[in-house]
Image (cartoon, rainbow, N blue to C red; front, side):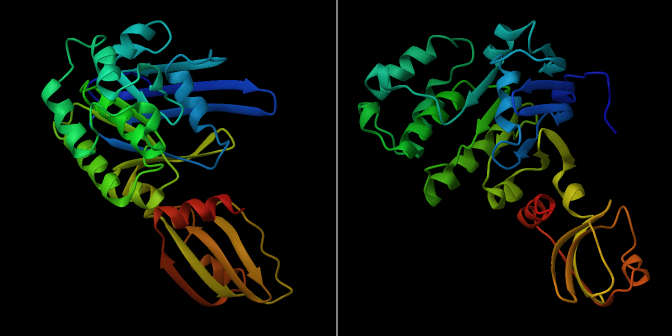
Length: 298
């Protein structure tokens, strides 16, 4: 159950009644709690509203309704204070104008004298195999992503928001990235929100998740509690028995008499399918990717 009172010791982010209208797309209303100290996965298909939500969090656009609170601050009224304590890394960040890596780092470092960690910055450059003297314009897309991550992590931000951070990273770089993220949240005072299409990585590393589609949150909460109630159920249903998606039962596929559904055990007992005429019923657990695909297949 969501609390309407914002407690910065408990929530790093709390969104209430958020709405934003664009021609052809409506975001919200959205309610969302991101617990402090969590690694929070924010997932949805392209155009679902992930980037719009993140943009509004960081003042890139004006909300039509609702509130966003981050680290105890109003994201709109206290935008400057929020940006000193929260960091964002997205695929559109560009640092080539500074020429070399060490010049870009020196520039960004100047904005965060109180929290910047030079020693940690050096460790991260080594971990991600970045040479401070390399020209940024010659870096691969993956290496530019690594540089953005280094500059964000070196600030030791209380809240780190990452938009598709693993794009362009090889398996070794992804491993190093998630090791650094786990280190950041060890003290339970730092929080990471990751928007990503890489659901297998998120399921391994995130402890909370929210699934968004068509501008609305479908499910949100601790990773295990979001996934556990669902299962894939296969069964036989006579051809003259129609079956449409309904609350708690999402039709995935029907081929003749064989039917596959996503079943929410919080909504129904599986035996309900027998009452609908099903036979030869089998069920299996789902992972985050299977849940995501099944929910969006209807």
